[in-house]
Length: 158
Image (cartoon, rainbow, N blue to C red; front, side, top):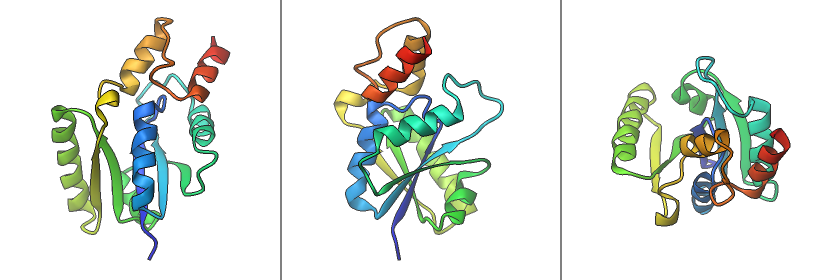
């Protein structure tokens, strides 16, 4: 049976920390699906189509990475994709507490679903999409925090 990991998130935008988590997970799984969750209540900096295109650009040379979108519960999406693994990155203690709670809820909803937490590397522990968006909105340089494709997309938007 194929080992498929779902890496869910909004990825608005994808950061070097996200990319690092995916790259570190690739030896562990046959396939990693970067799944962009949609939430009609949330305001995004990049459209869903832009986020998909940017993630595809970041992983264009990696055949084991697939991008997709989903609505609804992550556990339901994982079941639909026949995945038994959720992949999540943890940067801080509060992240761990939050992810632990979500992992336990997902396990209740789908007992075969295991959450794999990868601790961020120290050089990425301060990088978050929220902070990157804030820097973008205020015209700052995000090049140390995001892949080159994101920097190019931001310049094209401005």
